[in-house]
Length: 186
Image (cartoon, rainbow, N blue to C red; front, side, top):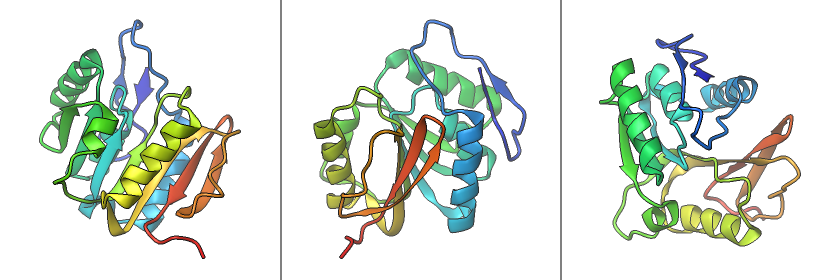
């Protein structure tokens, strides 16, 4: 079960089927994440890309806070159907564009728009090669707007401090959020 923690849908509970293999971001981590984002961006006016959406937990939070330009990318057809149904139940289906695509195929497309915020919560069994490919595609293929940020959720023992686009990392128990920007560190 997930709970929307803020905004117009605050307190709404969403129950995913037990057979879904997902690990939604905890309320504690979500609250901290959105506290950071709220201080850096006007959520109502940003374009958000959510990669590896799972059951849409992050999408619902952004929509609840007034964001109306959210693209959600998820490959699992059951999860995509669940997200569509949940968006409809919550009355926010016009705020989120759900795409059933494999994330790397989605990011490899040539003609695309850029986003102010890109959030990715890949599977915890991602390899270093997978992480490097993900970061490279997002930051080198102009997916991220000039002043935008890419936020990667990952296990805390993983570090991205040596990545040239790394800005900072915030740890919340066993998971961390690493922040990246378009500019390379000198």
